[in-house]
Length: 114
Length: 112
Image (cartoon, rainbow over all chains, first blue to last red; front, top):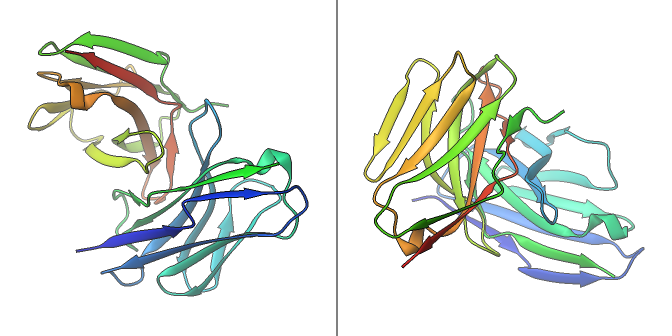
């Protein structure tokens, strides 16, 4: 069966510090991978989307970047965090090339920028 | 521009009764719709989906209805249980784009 892991679970970082959140998927090959953010009182906003290694689509302009160095690894980064980067970050995967299909989410990372 | 709208931020029902969660969308290109359930500090869990070629899909206690002419879908939970208490997100996908657009969620509370 497929599993998705995210770490860390919680993170408190000062403004201006760097960020690296990691997501890995097991039990599937060539998945589509996604990074979402859920800000307080808001829905899920798609940040980045990847259909393969090195292929990243950015959905909204922001202070963050994403990379996919391996097929089942997706990393969310920032060189300098802003207060507005606080939120709940979720990684998700779906079956690649399947057209319409469900996305499956990881447990999330709660980021607080102070 | 919010393409997927869940206009009720919260809903409270009694255990054993029906819960009806509503969702409206504006983009007529959406052709696949999903419902997710989310507990605090956890990732959303997929519940049920429906393609635009159908108007109903059922899975146990959960049924999703789609009214394409009204651009409206709803999730029915019968009977409701206290463990159903969570935030429910509606999501929509456009033509195999493999990207979902989410509503802001409805917090369901099922009272024993």
